[in-house]
Length: 620
Image (cartoon, rainbow, N blue to C red):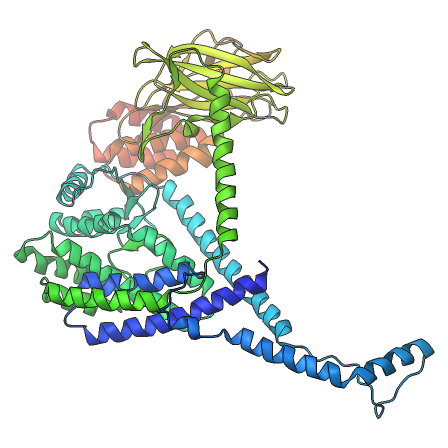
């Protein structure tokens, strides 16, 4: 299938979708007072189905089967005309051939005209190129916006306010959600929002957490959790995909906009169904207050906020005020209309070849992952299995726990995984590393030890000999990992550490003036505060580095604690660690100011002596 054929299919789908959208708008207008918010929203799914299945199925009752595609009609007429002209100009063609052979040139008044008119296909091909260029451009813009936002979100801290987290858990129990959905304190979001389809999280600024009452937080969380319950983020991506493919059709864009407005009404309807009558009015007041507090809301792909703009606020408030369950007889009537519209609206024969091709590509990809699992299982002892720990999305699969990384810089990835023997305690596990030797895989490491999952697999030249050592670690506690150092010896990894190094987080650090790497060890203290030490490798173990690494503290540590003191300015321990990081980065003036602010708070931890010690060092 070439580009023109795809574009032809998209145009047909878009035209039929436009007709369906107009019919839906008419139905919504006719039954406006009879339909509840649920049906006002879900009636739009007929349009979505039509748009995401451009090659629909044929039915004998379909009205669109009688519609001949305009391009085909024009093309047919063009071809017919071309055939007639060809028959009428046989003599001209012969004359042209004679002219070319003899080298003669016919003047304008001669019977030969060599200009060939551009037919419909020429312009249609140009239009298809413009369409795909616009779609790709829109996709890249949305992808760029989303990636930038994801990058910013992952830098933001988790909410640790116990009262707020308690409210969230209460809301999850109300609408029966067991999934872990963290709260991210994001200073970039203007309005509380649910973000992420695979790993959902609620984004809310620290200012809102402080300004909102407990009841307002409850209503906001119920709204965002309702979006999660109803899979609205996933649906929003489908809508966005449909909008990209039909970027040239304003009717489709208007319809998708109305669909999203109705989605918010349906979400409000879902929340109201879980509230008492007295609480329903307070919920409406919360939406009004949020609309007053926020302005200039920026579009974020894949996010659902309680306020998307002020254009739909009036409709939502009216719906909340008049909230009641609609009679089922009107719902049944709409269902009958939808069935009739569905039969006559979703047409055309599916392109089975394309579907089979996609299925084959998916099968090939899955087969590739399974192959690595099978390779690993060929080296596992009897009665053992690959460790599949749980994460925020539930239990992981064996494929998720196969790590591919080039550990010896030979251009070929090694396979790293962890497994557990039958009968091993929960605190014990085994690390397995496989290396490709020619056409075969060989075992480079098979080591048992303490831990419940593989945590890190790093490479760095930590002894300055020009060869990178391998650092493998196990997670042995919620905030504690243990890392060991290995070296290659004839395709075998040998442990060279006398003892393991415990850490919470770990970074590889460049040593100023040396072609060698150190490690920055972050040890958890309290909250999101960490004690950070720079350690060097002495051949057997890690010891404190005597050379200062101001760039690392300036680029990585200081910004981290600057963000923390903005989020929790009353936490003295964050001011202490900020002052310490500023001192190690060479910013004595900043360290002095931070230490003084921490002293004024007088929170009791760290003790005043710690702050005074930093002040003394910063004053020198």
